[in-house]
Amino acid sequence: MGNKKHTLFILGPVIGGLALLPALRPDVYYLSALFTLFMYAALACGWNIFGGYTGYMNFGHAAFFGIGAYTSAFLLVRYGLSPFYTAIIGGILAAILAAIISWPCLRLRGPYFVLVTLCLGLAVRVVVINLEFTGSSQGLWLRLLPVSIFVNRVIFYETMLGILLVTILIAMWIERSKFGLGLRSIRQDEDSAETQGVNATQLKIAAFIISAFLAGIVGSIYAYYRTYIHPDFIFDISISVLVVLMSLLGGCNTWVGPVIGAGILVFINEFLTAYTGIGAEISRIIYGLLLVVVIMYLPNGLIGLFKKRA
Image (cartoon, rainbow, N blue to C red; front, top):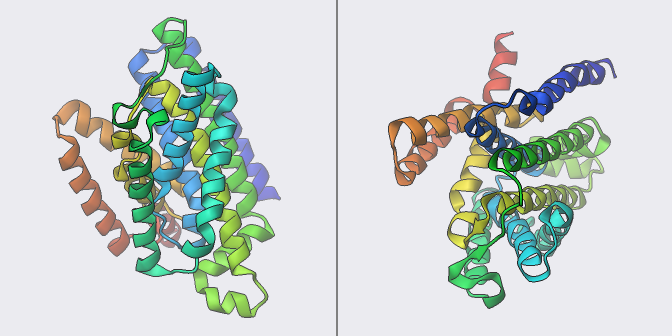
């Protein structure tokens, strides 16, 4: 309990300071960069609830992210409903997709599970790009908020910060609960955990659905932020790779690790794209190589490295 209070004592002022940052009227670029950081931190922290705690490398997270994005975009374009209110629906549809595919997918392990989740993201993209009501290959345009660009960025900044906070609180609760203990026992040795009375299948399905639900909500807000969505970048596999890399880099055994990993990689990404002029394809190669290095030399992430040295 003391450790939990200590964490909240640190987390509260940090979140509060970030929430008050727009009052200083920083440049719009910094608000946009921080929005991206919050988004990836929320995605990585949500991914870690399943992928990190159980050890199942899910490379299909972009599918749930994209489902949320297209749900809120469709409801806005067709019915005029704001994604700020319908984001929960995007999360629910992503969770339903996760529930449908969880039973056959979670019976697989190791590289077989990785391959299936990779195919999931590609399959959902193909389906969406061939549906007329999703804009097909033309994508969907969303109307802008009737406010100035600065106010627009502040609204999305605060919204994504709120989503990140909710995701962190859910991850903290799971990490300290019996549910989280069961998930981590699956990571250590799933067969042994089942012999000790852990219902591994039920726990994996529940964690998979929660992770997808949170990704769907993030995607719903991101779609409105972009004002234009297309399957090519909404379901881009590099989103899934980045999320996995962020979690592994920071450390998968705690909610803090993915947030730290997101901060480091978003900074690297901003540097590569804004200051070096490196294209998207080269960036993907760099992230792929970094993922290999992290798996080989940092199996427990930066958090695990710091604990070991301490």
